[in-house]
Length: 183
Image (cartoon, rainbow, N blue to C red):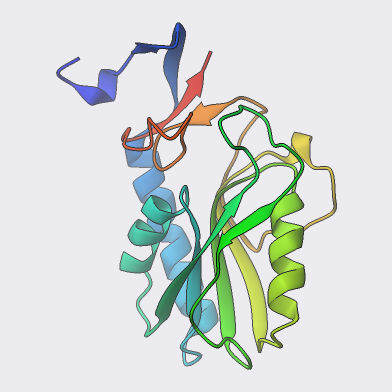
Protein backbone atom coordinates (compact mmCIF):
# COMPACT_ATOMS: atom_id res chain seq x y z
CA UNK A 1 0.00 0.00 0.00
CA UNK A 2 2.92 2.35 -0.52
CA UNK A 3 1.62 3.56 -3.88
CA UNK A 4 -1.95 4.87 -3.58
CA UNK A 5 -2.45 4.92 -7.36
CA UNK A 6 -2.45 1.11 -7.20
CA UNK A 7 -4.70 1.22 -4.19
CA UNK A 8 -6.74 -1.75 -3.09
CA UNK A 9 -7.91 -1.82 0.48
CA UNK A 10 -10.27 -3.83 2.61
CA UNK A 11 -12.44 -1.88 5.05
CA UNK A 12 -15.65 -3.22 6.56
CA UNK A 13 -15.00 -6.37 4.52
CA UNK A 14 -15.43 -4.39 1.28
CA UNK A 15 -12.95 -4.09 -1.58
CA UNK A 16 -12.26 -0.90 -3.44
CA UNK A 17 -11.38 -0.48 -7.09
CA UNK A 18 -10.62 2.66 -9.06
CA UNK A 19 -13.53 4.10 -11.01
CA UNK A 20 -11.97 7.48 -11.88
CA UNK A 21 -8.21 7.99 -11.53
CA UNK A 22 -6.80 11.16 -10.00
CA UNK A 23 -5.30 12.22 -13.34
CA UNK A 24 -8.73 12.00 -15.02
CA UNK A 25 -10.25 14.07 -12.22
CA UNK A 26 -7.53 16.72 -12.54
CA UNK A 27 -8.00 16.98 -16.32
CA UNK A 28 -11.78 17.25 -16.08
CA UNK A 29 -11.67 19.86 -13.31
CA UNK A 30 -9.29 21.95 -15.41
CA UNK A 31 -11.81 21.82 -18.29
CA UNK A 32 -14.71 22.74 -15.99
CA UNK A 33 -12.71 25.65 -14.56
CA UNK A 34 -12.08 27.03 -18.05
CA UNK A 35 -15.74 26.70 -19.03
CA UNK A 36 -16.98 28.34 -15.82
CA UNK A 37 -14.41 31.14 -16.21
CA UNK A 38 -15.73 31.83 -19.71
CA UNK A 39 -19.39 31.65 -18.67
CA UNK A 40 -18.98 33.92 -15.62
CA UNK A 41 -16.44 36.43 -16.95
CA UNK A 42 -17.30 39.89 -15.55
CA UNK A 43 -19.97 38.51 -13.20
CA UNK A 44 -18.07 37.95 -9.88
CA UNK A 45 -20.03 34.81 -8.91
CA UNK A 46 -20.42 33.38 -5.45
CA UNK A 47 -19.42 29.71 -5.41
CA UNK A 48 -21.18 27.78 -2.66
CA UNK A 49 -19.84 24.37 -1.71
CA UNK A 50 -22.11 21.68 -0.32
CA UNK A 51 -20.39 20.17 2.70
CA UNK A 52 -18.87 17.82 3.54
CA UNK A 53 -18.31 15.92 0.32
CA UNK A 54 -18.00 18.85 -2.05
CA UNK A 55 -15.11 20.60 -0.31
CA UNK A 56 -12.23 18.82 -2.13
CA UNK A 57 -13.83 19.21 -5.54
CA UNK A 58 -14.63 22.86 -4.86
CA UNK A 59 -11.10 23.62 -3.64
CA UNK A 60 -9.57 22.16 -6.79
CA UNK A 61 -12.23 23.70 -9.03
CA UNK A 62 -11.82 27.28 -7.84
CA UNK A 63 -8.05 27.03 -8.41
CA UNK A 64 -8.90 26.62 -12.10
CA UNK A 65 -11.49 29.41 -12.28
CA UNK A 66 -9.62 32.43 -13.56
CA UNK A 67 -12.02 35.20 -12.54
CA UNK A 68 -12.86 36.95 -9.28
CA UNK A 69 -15.26 35.00 -7.12
CA UNK A 70 -16.50 34.66 -3.57
CA UNK A 71 -17.00 31.42 -1.66
CA UNK A 72 -19.34 30.18 1.03
CA UNK A 73 -20.61 26.82 2.26
CA UNK A 74 -23.88 25.12 3.09
CA UNK A 75 -24.12 21.74 4.78
CA UNK A 76 -26.77 19.17 3.96
CA UNK A 77 -27.45 15.67 5.16
CA UNK A 78 -29.37 13.00 3.27
CA UNK A 79 -27.27 9.86 3.76
CA UNK A 80 -26.27 9.70 7.42
CA UNK A 81 -24.13 6.58 7.72
CA UNK A 82 -26.00 4.68 5.04
CA UNK A 83 -25.05 3.80 1.45
CA UNK A 84 -28.33 5.09 0.02
CA UNK A 85 -30.10 8.40 0.46
CA UNK A 86 -32.68 8.50 3.22
CA UNK A 87 -34.90 10.57 0.95
CA UNK A 88 -34.98 13.34 3.54
CA UNK A 89 -32.67 16.32 3.00
CA UNK A 90 -31.79 18.35 6.06
CA UNK A 91 -29.90 21.67 6.15
CA UNK A 92 -27.24 21.49 8.88
CA UNK A 93 -25.39 24.77 8.12
CA UNK A 94 -26.66 27.88 6.36
CA UNK A 95 -24.62 30.22 4.18
CA UNK A 96 -23.45 33.57 5.55
CA UNK A 97 -23.49 35.56 2.31
CA UNK A 98 -26.31 37.61 0.83
CA UNK A 99 -26.96 36.12 -2.62
CA UNK A 100 -29.74 38.44 -3.77
CA UNK A 101 -28.97 39.60 -7.33
CA UNK A 102 -25.74 37.54 -7.31
CA UNK A 103 -24.65 34.85 -9.74
CA UNK A 104 -24.70 31.67 -7.62
CA UNK A 105 -22.87 28.47 -8.51
CA UNK A 106 -23.60 25.54 -6.17
CA UNK A 107 -20.90 22.84 -6.02
CA UNK A 108 -21.86 19.25 -5.23
CA UNK A 109 -19.69 16.15 -5.02
CA UNK A 110 -22.34 13.78 -6.38
CA UNK A 111 -25.92 14.01 -7.56
CA UNK A 112 -27.98 10.87 -7.71
CA UNK A 113 -31.65 11.09 -6.72
CA UNK A 114 -31.74 14.85 -7.34
CA UNK A 115 -33.54 15.49 -4.06
CA UNK A 116 -30.78 17.68 -2.60
CA UNK A 117 -30.58 19.67 -5.85
CA UNK A 118 -34.31 20.33 -5.68
CA UNK A 119 -34.04 21.45 -2.04
CA UNK A 120 -31.14 23.76 -2.91
CA UNK A 121 -32.87 25.09 -6.02
CA UNK A 122 -35.99 25.98 -4.04
CA UNK A 123 -34.03 27.47 -1.15
CA UNK A 124 -31.72 29.64 -3.28
CA UNK A 125 -34.39 30.71 -5.77
CA UNK A 126 -36.24 32.28 -2.82
CA UNK A 127 -33.22 34.61 -2.32
CA UNK A 128 -33.68 36.09 -5.85
CA UNK A 129 -30.20 35.45 -7.27
CA UNK A 130 -29.25 36.92 -10.66
CA UNK A 131 -28.61 33.33 -11.77
CA UNK A 132 -28.44 29.91 -10.15
CA UNK A 133 -26.40 27.04 -11.60
CA UNK A 134 -25.12 23.71 -10.37
CA UNK A 135 -21.83 21.91 -10.85
CA UNK A 136 -21.24 18.35 -9.70
CA UNK A 137 -18.18 16.15 -9.94
CA UNK A 138 -20.35 13.05 -10.39
CA UNK A 139 -23.89 12.36 -11.58
CA UNK A 140 -25.82 9.09 -11.46
CA UNK A 141 -28.66 9.61 -13.93
CA UNK A 142 -30.10 6.13 -13.34
CA UNK A 143 -30.97 7.01 -9.74
CA UNK A 144 -32.91 10.24 -10.42
CA UNK A 145 -36.20 10.46 -8.52
CA UNK A 146 -37.00 14.02 -9.62
CA UNK A 147 -36.26 16.10 -12.70
CA UNK A 148 -33.24 18.33 -12.23
CA UNK A 149 -30.60 20.12 -14.25
CA UNK A 150 -26.88 20.12 -13.57
CA UNK A 151 -25.17 22.79 -15.63
CA UNK A 152 -21.62 21.44 -15.31
CA UNK A 153 -20.96 17.72 -14.79
CA UNK A 154 -17.55 16.18 -14.25
CA UNK A 155 -18.44 12.54 -14.89
CA UNK A 156 -21.55 10.45 -15.47
CA UNK A 157 -21.21 7.26 -13.46
CA UNK A 158 -23.17 4.02 -13.10
CA UNK A 159 -25.14 3.22 -9.98
CA UNK A 160 -22.32 2.12 -7.66
CA UNK A 161 -21.55 3.27 -4.16
CA UNK A 162 -18.41 5.36 -4.51
CA UNK A 163 -15.88 6.79 -2.07
CA UNK A 164 -12.78 8.93 -2.19
CA UNK A 165 -12.02 12.44 -3.38
CA UNK A 166 -14.36 13.89 -0.78
CA UNK A 167 -16.96 11.12 -0.88
CA UNK A 168 -17.26 9.13 2.30
CA UNK A 169 -18.57 6.01 3.92
CA UNK A 170 -19.45 6.66 7.55
CA UNK A 171 -17.33 9.85 7.46
CA UNK A 172 -14.11 8.11 6.40
CA UNK A 173 -12.35 7.49 3.07
CA UNK A 174 -12.81 11.11 1.88
CA UNK A 175 -9.03 11.50 1.69
CA UNK A 176 -8.51 8.85 -0.98
CA UNK A 177 -6.92 10.44 -4.08
CA UNK A 178 -9.37 9.13 -6.70
CA UNK A 179 -12.96 7.88 -6.91
CA UNK A 180 -13.35 4.23 -5.98
CA UNK A 181 -16.19 1.74 -6.29
CA UNK A 182 -16.95 0.04 -3.02
CA UNK A 183 -17.78 -3.59 -3.87
